[in-house]
Image (tube, rainbow, N blue to C red; front, side, top):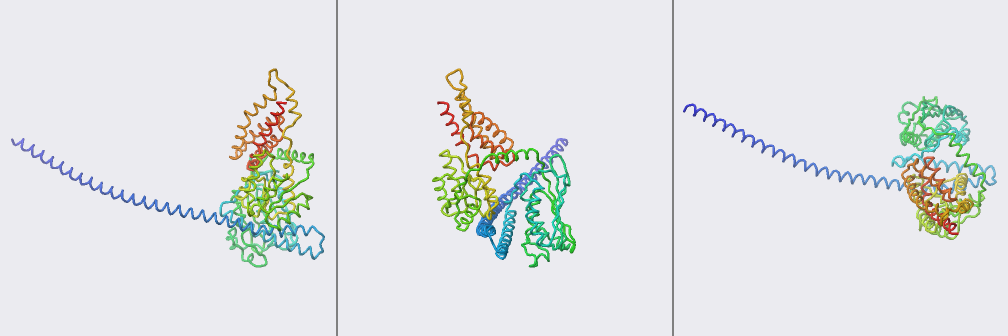
Length: 565
């Protein structure tokens, strides 16, 4: 019995221990559940706070976006409002200087031009800074001929340099490739800014431009640009503050030199945008050397030169037809100025209107070589007028009339809007007689459409009858109709997406197929698109896309008539 009693006692203790453990485990589970519930409540509270913060952040982000958009719109409007009267001032001064003047009158006109150009420079600096801050500044990659760029800058700035009693010298490394790839406009802008700065702080001295090859590989070259002067120099303290907006050296702030303090800041931003470096080496009283380094891609110079010579030969062979212009601008001064400029260029067939509605009416009533269209006009602006003109051309299967945008708003976003509306090119106010002349020369050839068909080729095909009832021309036309619409749509996709290689291949294929059937006008459109795509400038081909379908339909209709005959 004693053994049984001891066993029972042990079992009782074991049961009590297990019961105690279960109770403690239950208590632990309840505490864990309570802690989990508290943590879950905290998590829910945090989620609510996070959602609230997200809403606040989204509201703040949208407010910042709206503020940025408002700033961009404000800057764009200010730019247009300033540039429009400046165009009148500079343009009329240029026209006046071309007329017989006394020495005193000529000096007065020069003062007007210098003052207006200075004001334009200040406006451009403010606009560039705003575009950079808003992220609106974009690079425009293309061919860079550094020797030609330097020569242009020297021709432009040498009179200013000599006026300050300075000598301008150039040292360009002969190992640099003839043609490189980069943003030629921005490189020119930086160099002009640095050279003007050097000249401003130097008197009876020297301004030297050095362009040196730093690195060379199969596809790129690193180029170092230096602008050295023998001017007043910059203290070490001032050097630490350069390249910041609105910052000038102590001497630079004096009325003797003037300026906004934006030039170097813009230079740094542009160099950074091109993934380069910029800096300065200087000692006070001993001159300064501003430098920047860029890596530029190599291009096939021989091919580019050959293309240029081919186009040049075509221009020489074709005699330019008389040019007729429709001018749409609501500003009376600008209308008078442009009409005077056109007359100076020998263009007398000019009709002027004051808004977009009148531009459409003029387009419908008469055929023009090209249209100069102001961007901002009352009643109907230039964008809407262009869209309607392009729609009319498509509906009535007309040949495309080149439309050139004219505006004081030169921000990239506004240029894009012009191209999207169907305009062919862009000219920013103020513009000189030379700029206007080059723009008209560029587009007047394309304003005279070629024949829809090359009848000699068509007749050769038509005479090659097949053994059956159908003619060879009819069979080829059916094949052309089957393949071409799909290829045109593919070409459109490649151009819009910026796939230059695919666009080049499809445009070449369409061009060749069209030429083999004697389809002349449409093949010239494909050839232009192919050339733009080859140059990596598909965006410039976008305005031509809307002309493809009407030209294709016109060609098919003409071939169908010949086939039936």
